[in-house]
Length: 383
Ligand code: SF4
Ligand code: SF4
Image 1 (cartoon, rainbow, N blue to C red):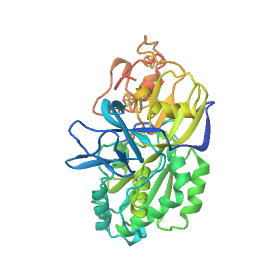
Image 2: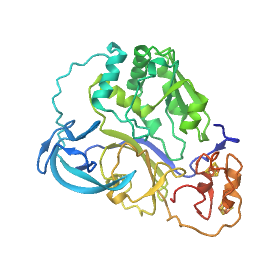
Image 3: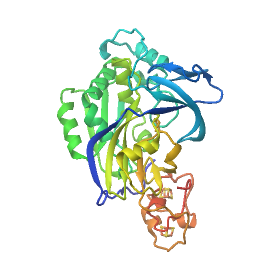
């Protein structure tokens, strides 16, 4: 897949990035969704520990991200489904962990088979939104490991913050994976836009001569799976967040229960970065970042390719990367003013206003929808 022309997404005008990390890892209540067919391992008023299995299904299970007491059952919204049944756990803020009695060892001491067995045992989810388990089965057959450490959408700086906070751990883990799976080359790909972090990575990566950094231009569309796979057909592609999850499980035998996300208010013109406990209600995270902000529309996972959600009953799960609070409500549909912006921005020179695009070639990049001043839904799902 190759775009006919590359689109540079405009830098966030008048919006300032506050790079300091806000911690919101002690919510009073967390909500853990389950499927109707799941076997529940807990009941009302049970005390649970962090890492305890709450629900089981044929090929997977769900563990508790906190310790506390089961305080109710109710429907909640997740990105992929509304009204999902969930258990609410009253967080005792103690983080009491289930005693698993494991011996910790250096990551490099694992064999590839042991790593695969650990992944199988803990059923680690792939954090690329693919709804599949993290699978490194054919990693040892690859000559190249690519780490995607960037996002395309504006206002999304969580990858930069993950690099900033966990750089040593990430490099240690990547170096270990390289040794364990005998991969000849490992490349971390970042975008040019946040030079301070790129410099920090460059200064540390020198300690690992086998690891490489590639700085890509700030074009839109580079993070699409299709693009990466076409560019590196022989590579194993791993998301940076997955590397962190791997580090936690291999080095500390800990499941990952928090995540760094970007939260932006276009009303206040600020981007904030939050370390949030998974399964926290989204509205609490928004209120923590922007008190008394007028909430119009809320878009998750990017203003260009993301989707509109109602944050009141939605939780932050592994699929959420960013939250953007729009200044004004998006109108559903208006009249086309024939400005031509949609065809100008399309990487394939289609004219989406006349539905003149080839569905097989269109990458659903959503740029046409994004630039349309009339907010007409030209393609894809309604936002
Ligand atoms: S989504 Fe719109 S801008 Fe993107 S390729 Fe398709 S028609 Fe073009
Ligand atoms: S960007 Fe929107 S308003 Fe402008 S020509 Fe395309 S459909 Fe019409």
